Length: 396
Image (cartoon, rainbow, N blue to C red):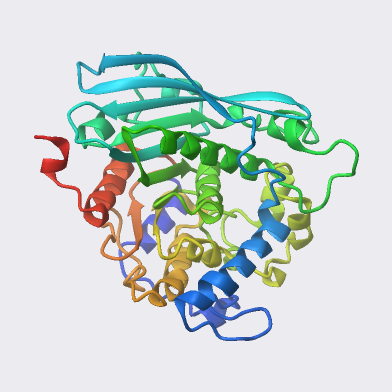
């Protein structure tokens, strides 16, 4: 184990003294820009939540120019009802869309458990690794997306590759959905959507499909992402309230980790390394995190009163596990407005001791930056608990 990783790992073996919001100069979740205190679910829903969402659109992720396009259509390209030795029905769905700049397609793979009462809840993974990790034929099986295990637990396992929406490269926003939907007759605005927002838009189009499939319980679908995909899942869940559970795995900077901690990857570094991920306005906060009008605890708070789960890894100092945990702690006031428990603790847990009692879940996994079967099992345990799933749901 590398010295830095060992230091981080050892730090989590004992309770950690956590910083208060004022110590980090965090913006208050329940205080509006004009200084008013939010004291009711209605004031959150109708006032503060839209305000926070707009701040993230303007200064961080950018603003998508289109929601569900009128051109959207679903093509079920292939259906196999006896997949995984009869445990699942596999569907390959092409989600087609078009705009002034051309046409695009999301290739969605869906496994629906055969032995489960319909409709079935489930998980959709935004895959940001090689396509072999989500092989629809299952000739290559990766712990990154353990579809067989998800199906055995009685859940839909769905996924698509983020490059279907936009290749992860900086080409001036000419390819992918930016090239299809951005206006060509005007200069790109500083709050125009970046690549993270484009991938999130794609997850919402997958939800459009789930709503059309009678075998899928679209009211209980989770959106999942790892690393840059975890940033995407959080932004998708903030914008699209149809997702009942939002899961961020090792998402780090501009994902779940607090920017004001200035630990691990920082805003300037991520904007330099990945200038296409966020809107241009975000670059004005390079090395000026304290001037941001938002921080990532507010992004997590945007899920309230829905379920959200954040996971970290003990050897992943670059993603700042403590900053991810603190964001969960300081998102709790939005849940308390609804009489719900958020994280339920301010004590950092030791590795492999998930916190799942409240509407915000968290765990710190031993190991490196990765999405593993351990993580998936924690997410399914959380869904079981909060969605009231039990053995009878799977027909066993």
